[in-house]
Image (cartoon, rainbow, N blue to C red; front, side, top):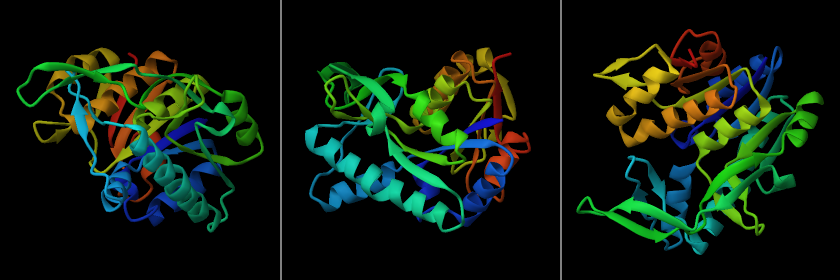
Length: 269
């Protein structure tokens, strides 16, 4: 099988957990794997230390995102690519896993259109239109490059930085980057690892959903999970067979997820 797994910043805040590393090692012995990472928490911390407090905005649909001006995208790229991506690659290599660090800037791996404007909700609950900054809408993934690495036995480790039509770095959401990578590759499964057990409704994990049920739940889901559900639906629409949202803080997080032993499993039907 071809698996795309993504771990968010809350999973990776103290480096790559040993259970994740060992499970990647076990997974690549039987499957092809692309590993996408987040790191928003680290970006915020370092930006603040550099005297650039971060601003977050919320869309009318409830999506919370980082407002990315020119200075912020430079810090974002520095942390995601220069720090976190290299740390993850080093951690995998130290355990004998052949890994290659990439961002969307490398070989135009992730291509996106820069957003000209954003519609956000202000403090009074009113809609406002602001400049789009350096955020992007993904429209292409260089699967030739990824397949070349996968065929040679490497694990591509992908940072969610895209390249614009003007060859500028753009901030793109990690979950949605993973969804597009999985969708363009026609992956068998997409695993979104987070710091909770799965989608929680009324305090209980929802074990299985189809795409229609997931769409109906979107208005009831908070900002921490809504992007993951939306990314899951995008991946399914692009041909991924199954998406699993699960904890990255358990033993065997990836293999347990692809075996449907934990988390929330979302399928098209």
